[in-house]
Amino acid sequence: MSLDDEPQSLFGANEGAKDPDDAVRAQARRRTRRSFLAGAVGAAGLYGAWRWILGRPEIGQVPAPLRHALDFNADISHAIFGNRGLAPTFPISHAVSDVRVNGVIGLDPALRLDRWCLQVKNLADAQNSPHYFANVNIWKYADDPSIMAQDDSLDTYVDGEGNLDRENGLPKGPEPGLLLTMDAIRALPHVEMVTQLKCIEGWSEVVHWGGARLSDFIHAYPPARGAHGRLPRYVGLETPDRQYYVGLRMDDAMHPQTLLCYEINGQPLSIDHGAPLRLVTPLKYGIKHLKQIGSISFSDARPRDYWMENAYDYDEGH
Image (tube, rainbow, N blue to C red; front, side, top):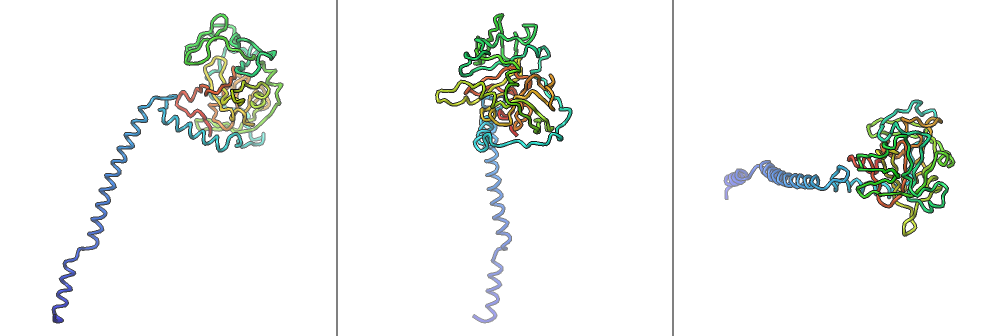
């Protein structure tokens, strides 16, 4: 081969080679097509899964899989923190002087404070208490008996003997328990705290509360224990007219900052703020702070909860 032939062969080889950029672009196109197909398949799968979730039976207006996910998150939170987490506290000077009024469900204007009694159900040895009644539903909080006679949300009827008849798996007929006055609540150790009330709507206020710890109440009036000697898992609270109701896990009820509150800023509660007795639990949003408590009950079954039935989280913590 002559020297003149060598460049020609070199140039011929270079002329036959492909541009490296073309190979990169071709590979990118192949990857783009694969990514598009994979994304389309994934999107179709997610859409199908979402449609399946939306087609499941609802629990409290939320599809069951999503409700179970909310409950699972709450279980994890309780397993990690239990009742060890504390809400921040503030100096009394930080408390607002005029606490915002929000929420009137269950605040029946017919309630006569001089007739108020707290119904306490599912207790241990309740019959040995001087406050025992074989049927706590005989209590009437208003002059007009028809006020207690109808509850459209529960298909409830209270007959002339005070017997409560409820559908949906709730207790029927006479319910034994205690009828307590405010004197019994005030006899418990008095505590005060200044904590932040947070509303699910997005606003918050620092409030000076006073009352008795719910844990002290539970120790004073112990609930009936189960077969293994454990406390019931839940506490249920309702307004006197049964229009508003919340459920608490027992560890939330035993939390040192959960109060049966009867004072704001050192003064008795107003009707608008839940007189004579309301729940305060500062690790929960305000929708859990039931005003005007009419009854407290204990059970291993999860009590009904007003906002959980209206598509909110049952735990309602923040």
